[in-house]
Length: 157
Image 1 (cartoon, rainbow, N blue to C red):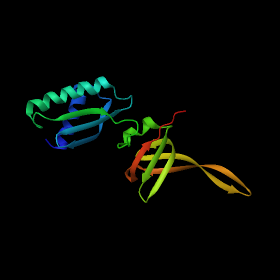
Image 2: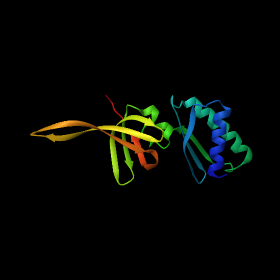
Image 3: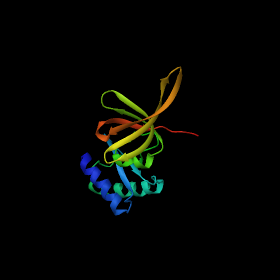
């Protein structure tokens, strides 16, 4: 079974189990180990991961796609995982984000908005004004397709 077929199977499981709020972020298949990472606007519960895992296992066991010895792991994308899909950004508005984008550029600041396929990140810089430094708020507008990697920074305030 190839990755594309496995992705479709997971998406079908999400629909059949009525987990319409959840979506597949990443799928990794190495040897006989399958790792599926999910996300949702409301978070991913252990119970939903468990139900989806059992649903997929029943199908894989029936058609023997991976033989009898395989490992299936269904989990949330995780707090420190990179954001991979545009639909992951709106739920993170207001959080600190670190973005590496094309042209060897980095943007770090507060995710302020997501409009169409653009991300807006606000940050402060020091600007010399006479003999004093003044803090100025700047905003980077980044196209989603220009993002190489982005991660939400965890704040313990």
